[in-house]
Length: 335
Image 1 (tube, rainbow, N blue to C red):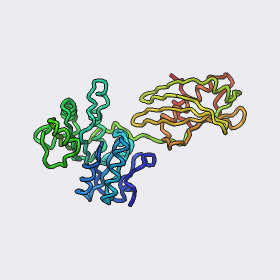
Image 2: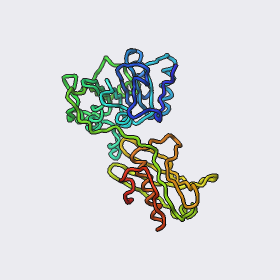
Image 3: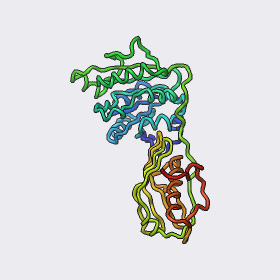
Image 4: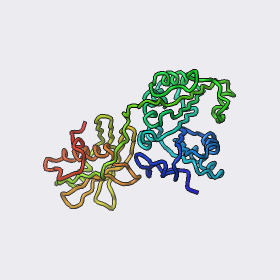
């Protein structure tokens, strides 16, 4: 039996889900599957569908994998991923038939509200990846979050309720989840939303991120690695929606190179990776992306290598760039 756990580094942007499952079938996604009880039950009841469960928690992923293996299910896969990354990077338009979001984290504190998943913006992103009339089901037992979900669903033009009201407080057709039962036992009211994606076209304002050829810059400089290392200090760079944090620099013991730990945040991708300044011969350096951890060569990586090269040029008047394969904006002044 093929492993149910997908390796996110090996999935293309976007992913051909029919190839991943080995067959053409409607794609159903549960976002935040928790114990996996609902996901596994749905896989058993709907063998003609391809089911994908996405979750951040490693213990939850392990538990779901064991259930899937024990039951011998072949139509379900699980993935450790952020929901926004899954939708924007891995799913093409019209890829998804149905989405289930059961009892998402309410992030109840005021300083945490921005971390809530469901918003008008999220619903727009979701709509761009769903088929017309594709089904969306949401459940929550948190009263304040229910108000926010209700407002978002009533505000979005991309979904319509499949019921006479925005929500109901009882749904006897669905499988009761562990968290749902806990909430009911503690006297909380559950809100159930059953919506469908509208048939009209949805503006595609969430492009699938691009990958570029592996980037590099070649420089000539009279400096040595010791001088470069001594002149380094943490710095940051921002351009449009891309934010780069150049963190620690490390010296390789058995190689003529410096490793710069770098964090790059560009919607919907966040990567912690390594950039390498390698001395090929005295006076000649290459700045490139280290392949540790299977990083994606995105626009943000291009910007990061360009800014590291710009910093290095600024260390010495005789240092200059010989050639590169970067985007033109990658070598703009750092900010």
